[in-house]
Length: 271
Image 1 (cartoon, helix red, strand yellow):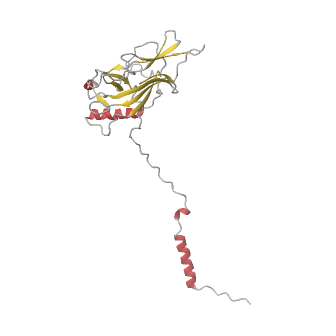
Image 2: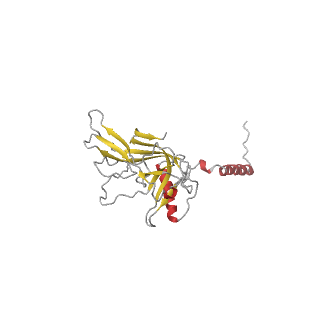
Image 3: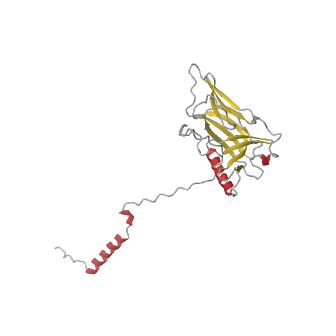
């Protein structure tokens, strides 16, 4: 015989309904909804120079020094004196020149008269008596200068824009450079005394010489040193409306010419 079914009491039904309601309220709301994407964070840019200074970090330091000099301020932070550097910069980007004067402190590429060879040339400038060095004449016997061409270009490759955009525009004045300084009685291995660094490139076999479409690279390597004031960079300006000229004092260990792929074509080393 079947037992009669007794319906649950109203209080039991109410308790069960309350538990179901509370269970629904305690569920994780994100489980039933699409995940919310976190907002992208703004990248933090670190301005501290790299352990070994390259072209970009050295030009950045010179930009800061130029601004501070123009504003009559001191450059904050530690001096770069003692820091190693390896600076590469492109030259010969427009192809070899047929003739034309050389500018001291800048590398160039020229054709031979028979166009069977090209010559890479760099004659350092004599900066020993310049206004930027004169205050340290008693400390250094000589100072040979190298300009950092196109200081607005941080990369060490040829610029994407190749000449001819403004034929009447004057050549850009050089405003940033490195002065290789030499103490009296010190090593003269890399000191040039007016002589140029030179390398001649000739064709191989019967094929005509084809200069690199991406130019060549000048490599300057060594260690930053300090002027009498303890700073590695010094700036001067003719007047308030001209960009200051800034140079870094360096002890030069190596000068080299490379092709666009980084192959060493010729080099000069200290020691």
